[in-house]
Length: 86
Image (cartoon, rainbow, N blue to C red):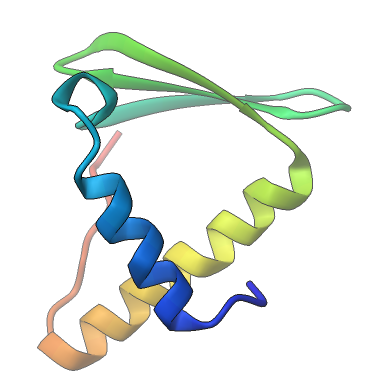
């Protein structure tokens, strides 16, 4: 992520003002991979609600950012965020 943190904050603030029908809460997901891309199905209460398709490089970037954010949260709160057991 080459953007400045203030750019990320501005994007999040703008997105938080989207209409409710454009905001998605999910509590589950399924992923699939092909040689070209990665598919992500978001679900709420075990029902699919959105389908995302992205490149491998964007998926890797998302993985790195989420890992960093969760690591920082765990360090600041001295709390472990456990993965949901499968």
